[in-house]
Length: 91
Image (cartoon, rainbow, N blue to C red; front, side, top):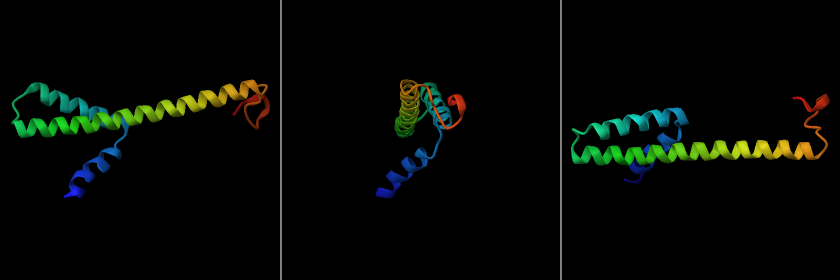
């Protein structure tokens, strides 16, 4: 029983941001359109929550990478601008 709950999450984690976002858009569209049973609506809602978490984690990861790159660049500037092994700090 536990594997049924964990499997969709593992599958969702394999999605890229754009894929998860596109599927989330489709889930929202289907919920807004109506015409689904209560059980179908609940399943769609749960899937949407899962996809939203995937998107949030992807965005948080991208933000962390950007912050790290900016901090590295700033540290390089404080060290006199030698930002690498190539002349002039170009890579």
